[in-house]
Structures are given as structure tokens and as C-alpha cells.
Image (cartoon, rainbow, N blue to C red):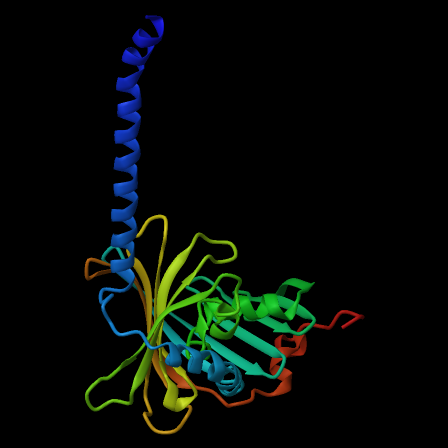
Length: 299
């Protein structure tokens, strides 16, 4: 009798647990489906496994050529940032040579220069009197310096980078998976290829996204976008615009960065080329001597 009473009193709780479990499963399926639609609005697009294999085979060599050509390009960039209805303009100058980079940032109140080589990194501030003050001088791995420059200097790295990471490094991350590959035909324009992917990331939550490449010109990157698996509140996007449509290495004209949700853009940033700089900057541009600062005894 007690056992029957116990079953009678417990079954509403069991039934409620089953309902909650079913509801959570439905919510998760809906959330995942919505997330996939944000990143890939055309899930019925024909897949092409051979195209994905072609990309994985050809891209590493092409990326090496892209990096060799673009990484050494100096440039003066104008950055237009739109945030909550306000527009702000800033300007910076980037110089480079093999194993060395320098960024001069023109702030409203002061100017800073950031210089790195394969061993060290230093920061210099221009004072009101026109002379330079050494703010930092420290050993730093070249990989860390490269990542820093790729985040803050956009034009020379846009043809082959996703944020601070090269596409070559990104597709080699553990768990990276190509989920779809197909050709994108635009009337009157060179054929492009879209690669859809999923990646758990190293320090971030799972992301799904895409790249748009031009395989006829060293798999030049034209666009990328991604969304985070846990939120699916929108997608981060970047679109690269080129000036010269001839040759394997066209000049970058501008790059657009923004967040997109329901067709509406926010957190917009557009980086434009004001003017180019010599392909290889003079060696003296990257030393403390260039700022009138005496070198340390171990320099």
C-alpha cells in the first residue's frame, strides 16, 4: 500500500521532469538552428568536397606568397569608427622591413611610436616640446609582436588574416572543420569560393563562420564572418575592398569591420588607405637613433 501511495505521489514530479527535459531539448534545437541560419542563410547550397580538398591543398603555398608580398608594405591608414551614432577619425602610419615593424599613432593629445624586431619591443612618446621619451624597452617574442600589429594595423594584413591570426594558422587549429565549400559567381567579377567552417577555438567558445576567397589570385581573402555558438546574437564581419583588379596582388583600398544582426550594422569601423609607403622602409627607421634616443649599452 505504501509503495502504491509513493508511486502516486511521485509520478507528477516524474512527468514534470520529462516535460522540462523535452522543452530544453526543443529550445536547444531551435537555438542551434537559429545560430546556423545566422551564419549560413542558404543551408541548401550544394556542397563540393573536392573544392574543400583543393582549398586545403593549395592555400598554404598561396598564403605564403600573400604574406611575403603584403606584410612588408608600409601604409598610412585613416580609421573611421562609428559607435552609437558618433563618428571618430584617427590616422596612423605603418612601416615595415623583414623582421621589423613600426607603427606611429597620432592621438589628439600625444603621439606614440611602437617598434618591434625579432628580439625586442619599444615604445616612444613624442612630448610637447617635440622630443621623444622612451616609455618601454623590453624583450618580446616576434610572434607576440606580430599578433599585436595585426590587430592594430589592418591594410597590410587583411588579404590573409582573420583578426590577429593568419588564415593558415586558423585552419590548423585543433578541431577546425570545413562544413561546406561552394563557388560564388558574381556577374562580371572573378569567380570566388566560399568556405564555411566550424572551430572550437583555442581561448574562445565554439564559432561557426565563413571565408570568401578568390582562388585565381593566390586565394586572396575578400571577406570573412563568424558568430559565437553560445549567443548567436549576431555575426562579426570583415569585407576587404581592392583597387587594382589586375595581377595576383592588388592593392587594398579599404576594409570594413562591423557586427551584423537582422541586417543592421553596429560597431562599424572602416580603415582606408590615405597613401602608400615604400615597399621596404630604411633600416634606420626602426632604431632608437631615429628618435634621438641613445641606445642602451646592450643594444
